[in-house]
Image (cartoon, rainbow, N blue to C red):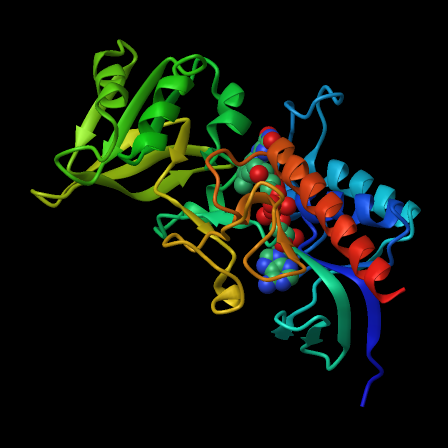
Length: 314
Ligand SMILES: Cc1cc2nc3c(=O)[nH]c(=O)nc-3n(C[C@H](O)[C@H](O)[C@H](O)COP(=O)(O)OP(=O)(O)OC[C@H]3O[C@@H](n4cnc5c(N)ncnc54)[C@H](O)[C@@H]3O)c2cc1C
């Protein structure tokens, strides 16, 4: 049987939220371990260029993740990436974690930062052209499509609002939506409908992506007639929903109907000693800056919780 290692705090997830929590907790001289399923950096590693992180004019996402990782390590934070948590007990005073390799860890406080993923269309070519014409983030990638013709897939508020915001860059925006009506606020629908750069194709979906090195065209399937149209496009933005990586937290902390973790203003979950931050909590705007902001609050609140625990037991 492997020996259990006990920490003051365990952070689950190694994206910007998890790394920020690691930086703050370690700097507060709390013995901290980050456990991350994927590579360190989270969704930032998928981002070729981050141009909206204050203080850094423009940086590759992988590099920003690496800088945050080194900063956490410089304060003594331990990191384990590419791990698989097979069991987790959060209810007691001591929180325990078991990994698929049999290692066990425990901590007095936990910060959950598993992030999330955009819902994908799941159609041919989507994996090949991700980052080569297909994007799931207008704020992040809109600028790359200056004077280009793009398609926006979706019919909710984010699709319509992002379609309008993308007209700042693109020469033409075609919204493709599967139903005969939008599921968005009236003002968002109005703004999209009357915009001179936007055209709308209803009751249709993007069913395949084509190109050489980069995306060049899509198939638009008109659902009523089952007619397929090959449509030239330099870029496609998919806004058909967002999925938080919280499947492993079902029954462990309170989740809302979208699977997002419910937290208060101090980033506390409903379980004492368990805090949460980043893209997986219930909130509207998901950016690196908001993730590091939430995680700062979560780490400070966790530090305070640990301080009070130590004072009680002294
Ligand atoms: C293509 C793209 C481009 C973007 N560009 C920008 C941009 O330019 N500017 C900007 O501000 N934002 C951008 N974003 C958004 C930004 O990347 C996210 O808001 C941010 O990364 C969220 O940070 P996070 O730490 O909450 O989650 P994530 O970055 O998702 O990190 C979550 C981490 O948790 C790990 N994890 C998941 N499940 C488990 C588990 N069960 N156990 C352990 N670990 C787990 C993951 O492997 C990952 O390491 C972009 C996003 C994408 C997808």
